[in-house]
Image (cartoon, rainbow, N blue to C red; front, side, top):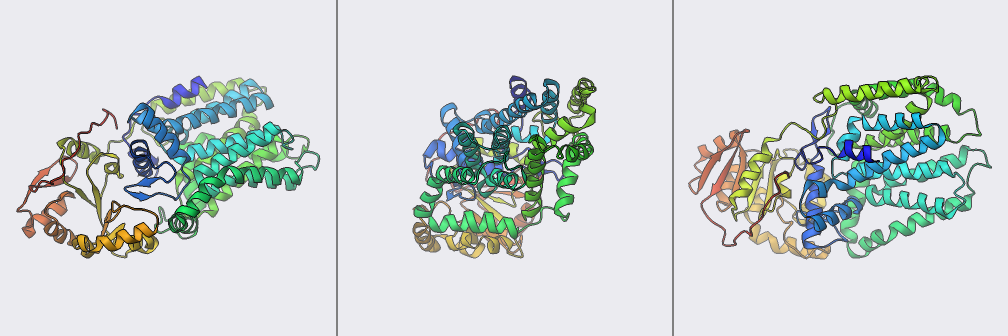
Length: 539
């Protein structure tokens, strides 16, 4: 555990919020971390622990266990990347420890170290151990549940029953319906295992009931207090929307190609050793007296099927495949048989060293280092000005880092010619979270109507209104600057040239910074002073 904590924790505060690559192959930044950070900071500083919020609106796409843990740490230890990201690190360390103890019990000490070495040399395992993301907590809950189940398949002790139910419930409270995968594995095992090895149906019903009891309070509370928002965000958007009709394709590749390509390019050695171990795993399934091969096969099959069935392609989801892949490669690849196990482990340690040296490669270990995002330095500079004006960011390229800063108000202007976002999230338009530029020009007039709608949905606040301004073209930005000369703007240099040519900047000062963007600062000062705030050196 200490080794895992040291290797996975080193460099946890190198990358600013949202700037690490959640997909190092597609070069996708971890912008979800910014939303989670905004919500956790709001909990820590303003309360509202039962119902998470982000940029003033409720955030119910997933249950809030991650946000509770991160928010608690931020409240106790103050604002820091360590406090924000400790849940992911703790989950990764615990999951690694469980995998080690599991194979030490079932195989040998050398094989246990081999499985742990696979995990600790996997780039994705490193990435998500250093992020405030739901996926590592979800994966750790799955590791714990399957480990408990394999140790006692009948679940005939209260300790096993309670532990399995608690791990499954934790997964649900992190990842919603996806957290129920341990129950799917249990059900499949019950269907195919020898009768004397499997739990009775009554035990299956009992563990399902315990999980339901553990996760029900938060869900029932939201259904009672915020029924409309819960249904729109949790069910329609996350489960039905992203699950079946994702609004934006992250890649033109098919589901199998998308995930296999990324898993192979980030850890080719693990994938090759997994594929070559599968025939030996299948052969081991013939021995019905041993439960380990069956559980590992079911675990890999269920998590792989879940990846292929969920409509939205997102590399962090593939994290759940990595532990069973490491276990299978270590336990069933002939390279790590009793005769060669020590040499195989030494080779893995050498591979770890090579990955650490080649940190810039997709399969290398960067220990938290990442290509800097220019917008971070720009926004820190703007933050330190202490301006009281609201900031409107045109076509943001900051992975929403701006939402984690204590600025008076941040709005996002984006061009969406096909109106995809408003069609995918129609309730955002109904509640005024997303406004057209025409509506935003008449913000004072439309605010009462949207405030009433927000109130009817259980949110007595006008803060979310106009968080996002959706426009059909870049030229609309000229109208926006003319209509709201009291706001500050962050724009690209191309947008700056366009706005300057229109003559709309008579009341503004322009500051161009490195990185291809500029700030348009209003000479009209807000009457509301901005409270003093400080950012940690690394944020």
